[in-house]
Length: 129
Image (cartoon, rainbow, N blue to C red; front, side):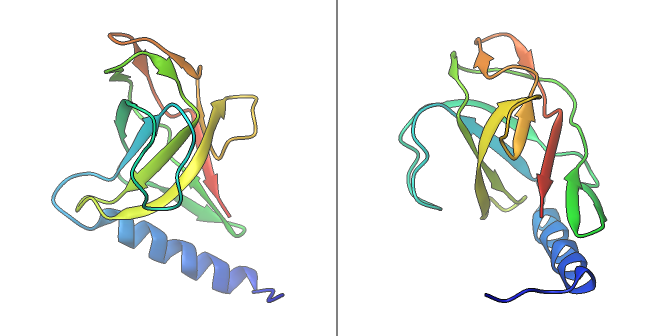
């Protein structure tokens, strides 16, 4: 197992932020219900909401990228949020992750994972180590 220094990890996370900043649109987290597919695989569930990430996307400190909380956006479909795919401004896949409520264990946290079409949600917190 390779262990990297905090300095190298922070440099790597700055690269993640640069990747997300590419493109003419903002990076976004597409939140789905259902089972998460393999990375980059076709989503098996339905898209519940696409949340545009803040600019800047977040901050890097002590080897962790902490996402900036986002503005509220309208939910487009009703369902139980279970996972999210984050893409850059060109639509290129960055990562897939679990979604939970604020006190849950998901890498991306929403106020509630029960989403209703026409309601609003936002990213409360998110971290990448």
